[in-house]
Amino acid sequence: MAKRTVYMDHAATTPVDPRVVEAMLPYFTEGYGNASSVYRLGQEARKAIDEARADVAQTLNCTPREIIFTGCGSESDNLAIRGIAFWNRDKGTHIITSSIEHHAVSHTCEQLEKHFGFQVTYLPVDKYGRVDPTDVEKAITEKTTLITIMYANNEVGTIEPIAEIGEIARAHKIPFHTDAIQAGGALDLDVEALNLDLLSLSAHKFYGPKGVGVLYLRRGVRLLPPQTGGAHELNRRAGTENVAGIVGLATALKLAQGHREENNRKLIALRDRLIEGVLSSMLDTQLTGHPKERLPNSASFTINYVEGEGLLLGLDMMGTAASSGSACTSASLEPSHVLLAMGIPPEVAHGSLRLTLGHENSDEDVDYLLEVLPGIVERLRSMSPLYTTAS
Amino acid sequence: MYSEKVMNHFMNPHNVGVIEDPDGVGKEGNPICGDLMEIFIKVKDDRIVDIKFRTFGCGAAIATSSMATEMVKGKTIEEAMEITNKAVAEALDGLPPIKMHCSNLAADAIHAAIEDYLEKKRAKQPA
Image (cartoon, rainbow over all chains, first blue to last red; front, side, top):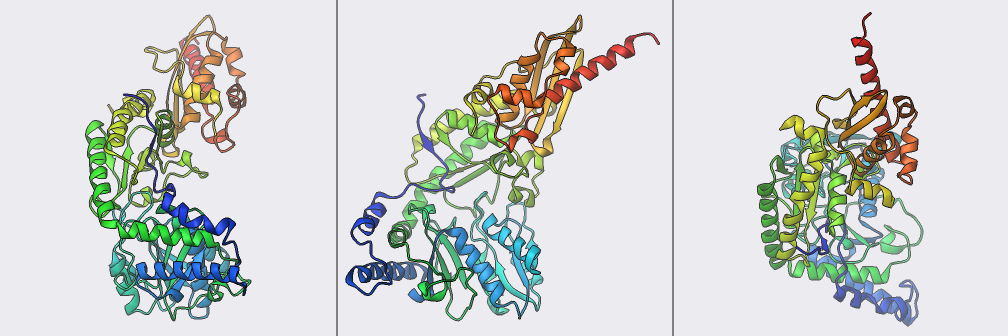
């Protein structure tokens, strides 16, 4: 089989849709005005932002004033968590989160804990990576001022029961934030149906540009902005607006959410064939994350006796881009905190592989992956002292 | 992130396998940390005449195993004891800093194999 280029790392980032690029282009060289300026050029930029804001608000079923544009998904998470925590500091200093959050959430919580005297509860997950809503309720104290649980996990694709958690948060009048960065293009973002007070998005996860994100903030919920300066974004996020980026985000979100069901149908068919193919072609290989309640594009595995980075290098030599929660693929030496929280032993967690599909992937791409992967695994296993010990 | 030499040794590693009836075996690392190396040596007249390895680990772990075994093959055990993890990394045109400690264990594993050989040899000699 001829070598081909296959990108299966859409949870890391996605290519920008050409229609998105087209919508953005005028705002670099012609409509370059500062949206705070009174003259026509500035007001044209303002109009573009207003329209983008209205479009995003429509998708989220909220009002435009509740949409804050940010510089990325991590910034949205930081603004939400730090902003709510500091605004309510006199009321309480307790935060509830899960043990499988993205580092944009978990490291922000850890910093509040370590340097600012907050208490953080990191809820456990089951073997599929699901938080139990009753655990959320049990963790609530008089001092709890924020609950932050992700919508869908970036490593294993598991979808969390956030509508239920939101209901609990609402009953206790505690602001509820969800990191929806992996869910943006694939899942329902109706903040009313999901009982959300805050939600983070990032454009580059749904075929939009890098460097622009959204934080939805429910009217009446107050936060202390970590970034101060001008009165941009209704005093909630200072900094000259990234007009082209904001237009790109809104265009990409509209396209992704507008074709969500048909896109998901196609992705789920590819994903399930990929999962079945991987599990049936190799022994000692497990699906990680929930078998059904998972993102339509996400297939994640642990492959015993091998280390994830070797898999990625081997796949890269065959033109295929994938990802792993292995320690060696990150700056830390610990294997994935997500897999460990799910009860997977560290030596197995080192052999994780994440394949995340996108619009441009075809049946032929899946066939190619299934053709090359077993050979790469077999070669690494044949070198591994763990393999012969086991067999 | 890796040099061409590292990638070459990762894709086509030298001296992979086990030696049945080895004169010395050395192990370094721990699968919980993500790296485990096993080195097998055959010694004749105080010279390493054959060496094989098995490694569970990242690209750097496999490449350093390959390079280190290549560097000591045919050397006397005295010469082989002088090889360092640093020298192995240099022979590969360097490793990313994060890999210098976690995945660069091959020289240590070779030293362990030689110690094992010397110990067995001492045990065989009449007291």
